[in-house]
Amino acid sequence: MPRRPLKGSERQSLPHASLLGPADPQERLEVTVLLRRHGRQGLQDRLMALSRGERSKPLSRADFAQLYGASASDLSTLKGFARAHGLAVVQEHPGRRTLVLAGTVAQVQDAFGVQLQQFQTADGTFRGREGPVYLPAELDGVVVAVLGLDNRPQSRPHFRRMSKVRAAAPAVAFTPLQLASIYGFPAGTGAGECVAIIELGGGFSSQDLATYFSGLGVPAPNVVAVSVDHAANQPTGNPDGPDGEVMLDIEVVGAIAPGASVAVYFAPNTDAGFLDAVTTAIHDTARKPSVISISWGGAEASWTQQAMNAMDEAFQAAATMGVTVCVASGDSGASDGVTDGSNHVDFPASSPHALGCGGTSLTAVGDNIASEVVWNDGGSSGGAGGGGVSTVFPVPAWQTGLNTVGADGASQALTGRGVPDVAGDADPQTGYEVLIDGESTVIGGTSAVAPLWAGLLARINALRGQPVGYVNPVLYANPSALRDITQGNNGAYFAAAGWDACTGLGSPAGTQVADIPNL
Image (cartoon, one colour):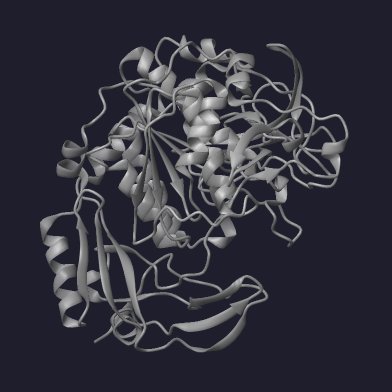
């Protein structure tokens, strides 16, 4: 039977990966298959209105699933395909347009026309593939993504601990409560809201959380772990590992919005796991989060086009349901850690339906900001706020007419979606006091900025009694609600008056953000 390549599914081999041989044909795996959207034009009309800053009542999750989920016919066609190839349907989510199929490597290879192999890198082994996924004619245009065939690590956490070398020199650290005060956050606890946090490894200790919040003098929030694709809350005991990300995220959100519930969605660090965690949170009818915080990502070049499209479509769904998605922009400056000599931006922060969160270095006297510049530490910790211009997503309407500024001071019009949108303290040398695996430490990175903004928005949502949802167009229409950062650079890009590719529109002037009339 003739097959057609699935557009955007091409995988490249990882640099410095050694081929070990074919994958075990009897190994069992699960594959996430994403179907086309029903009612696509209606959704695009809604998104266009939102991009113009027009506010409307968010859709309920049930209404979204009915209007824009997968059709019964497409689900039936895919299930017939699965049966024909001996694959079991282990999950079915019409609203998320997702079927999760399980089978052996041999069955999956036969179904999708791929050759799965084992590779070795310095970080371990993974199952991978090269080239596209192939589909039969009846699924051409029906299936838009097939994820999970390749289980290479898709993303990395964007946090950095205070340098032990530089920590001996004068350095300043803040509690999240102090930063909320310095940034002028409106009073409130986020009561009645739910903040979702996406994690791709590690875990948290309930005892550590109780100790931390007690030390801050705030009630501990209700924190629940949600398992996605068999992942779970599994602390490693290593503060330098993914536990650092998990605990940082929870402690920042929980300190700023202790009245909100915090749902932590744990998933495998693969393209399938990342997407499934995000869509599970967005479509969660039990917890109904109004804000999502994501502090994981990778350079656009490390993703397949199908995976980026799938994630952006998930964020589109969030926008129509009144859910704000805050995403860290990365900690490796304009290169995003890629060593090819070119500039890169981090995804999913580069999605135009995410609020990209960049980094600053902050000094304050009491509650007054003394200095705030682009975070760029060329010293021992080597971090800098991510930012730049997407090579995947076009310029959104609300960024029309904006420019980047280079080292020579010359401006260049945006040729793609500009990153980030907003910023906040991210320098580990002016970082966040947290407790991780029993150890009090100081952490920075743009990983801290996403939950900082998530906590602010949870407070605003509670105060308003309704979610602010897709905030990007409204913030760009009201730049005076942010504190413009005009000094510093992240490598290729320099801060300037107005939006820039280092700190976006700037850091929050919290009460002014809350007071935007049409937010």
